Amino acid sequence: MDTVVITGASRGIGAALAREYGTHGDRVVCCARSKDALDAVASDVREAGGEALVQRADVRDEYDMERLMETAAREGGDIDTVFANAGVYHGAPGQTPLAEESYTAFDEHTQVNGRGVFAAIREALPHLADDARLLVPSGGIAREAKAGFGSYAASKAFAEALVRQFAVELDYPTAVVDPGQVSSELTNGMQGRDPEDVAPMFRWAATEADPEEMDGAVLSLRDWKSATR
Image 1: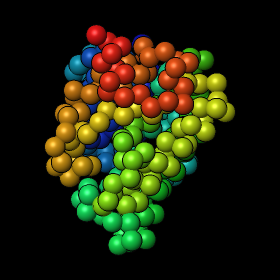
Image 2: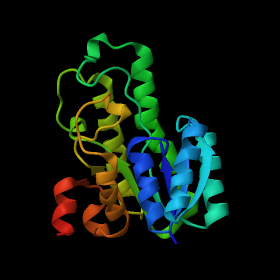
Image 3: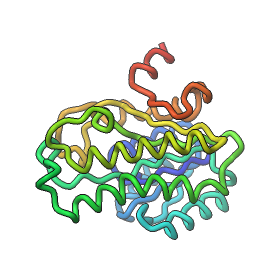
């Protein structure tokens, strides 16, 4: 039984990933800012056959992340995988030009989508299993600028830069997982893949992808499909 920590597990990819691990009988440690939504996801995990531990936490708060990782290790032993998944988008995708954004939106994007990745990984380090993996969801907007995505795009580029830096400094495989456009509350109704359909891709990255090839890389939908044909 693996112990998996998922930040931002109350909705979207995080919730789908928690349920995916539940079907494999793993132990899932879920965090988000909404306790009620987390409890619903945890119930799904248990019904699917897994174990679930819920803790309300804010990835912007390093002390919340420290407590989360300590709790995960205390209850489930060494952590096998960390998904630094929590993310926010203020405004409608494609309609938030950088020069028109508020400082509040800019700060929230960088603190949650960037600093939150740093805090989750940093505080997990003392509690990782020897073969642990560290994974961060992202998208093409982090690498190819498009008008109207403003500081959200910049924050995802920040997150990917953190992944590359951790990859060269840590002994644990660290990678970006890019499932393409996913439909969720975060994308404000934009058309995309169902989070449930791409959740197996994230578990593949955590359990089957070649650790040397993935380290510091962006794992794409094509990589997953090619590997699992």
